[in-house]
Amino acid sequence: MTFLRLRSLPVLALAASLIAAAALPAHAQDVWPTKSVKLVVPFPPGGGTDIVARALSQKLSERLKQPVVIDNKPGASTIIGTDAVAKAAPDGYTLLLSGSTSYTVNPALRAKLPYDPMRDLAPIAVVARTPLVLVVNANSPWRTVDDLVVAAKAKPKGVRYATFGSGSGPHLAGELFALAADVKLQDVPYRGSAQSAVALIGGEIEMGIDTVASVAPHVKSGKLRALGIVGTTRSSMLPGIATLAEQKLPEATFDAWYAFAAPARTPPAVIDRLTREITAAMGDPTLQGQLRAQGMEPVAIGAEALRALIENEISRYRALAHRAGIQPE
Image 1 (cartoon, one colour):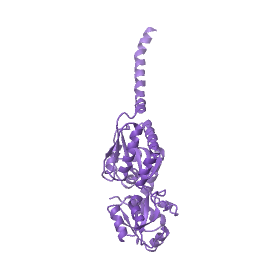
Image 2: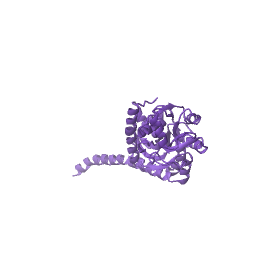
Image 3: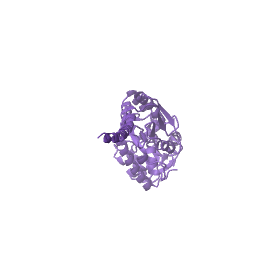
Image 4: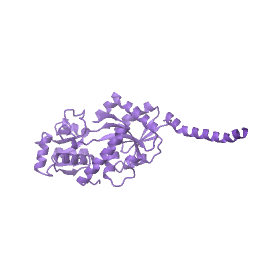
């Protein structure tokens, strides 16, 4: 009897040590975070994504009681920064905040990416939308979307619109609009919002699709006329402008949004904590006001809904690119 008890002691000790080891990750999750959290933004400082990141990082730092440090990693249409997060340690200390380009547009349009958002990233939350708006010159005869559609049908490819290159947000939005309205438009690439606005105001092109923040000043000054919001909801900057869905073109909807993600295999408890804290931070009226002042609409959409959104948009944009022959530059 004594012999049996003595022989069982090492086994019991080993079992105890295994149980203790198994409990360590759970304990680590309970105390997370114990140090600063790095928030990778795959854009240069000063852009829309960076503005969202800096507004939210302060609130998130307060809630997590640890610094949230912005790390700008621009380049290759957000691929460099996004891939850095996808390959980071899945411990909750490296996060991504990027626009929908990283999550849906690049995977849909590019045959080879160093990361797969569905495999290599763990969705956390959508925090803001940036509505795009369809605009024309203020002297244009088109006062409604219907006017524009009639003119485009009468002269295929006679309506020229600005993009920021093949596969850019305005290009995808323009192709979705053309498909939904059953018209053919002519895309014209420009380097950015400032250049395309000058071209539209000067009469080089007939139509533009850009962020509300970029074109609202020209609309309010009387140089451009807004015909419809391309996103799912109206914009607080131009509240009187109906969405394209409200104007019987729901298939033309194109949403630009900003979301948090972590490396895949980040502990579920950490993802849950981040989702809760980010959602709570988004309820702050001051933060909401900061985002709306930049033409963004604050939202709080959780991890499962974000995963479904990513999957749906990749399929939708991939099909669009195939039909329209879109190849990213």
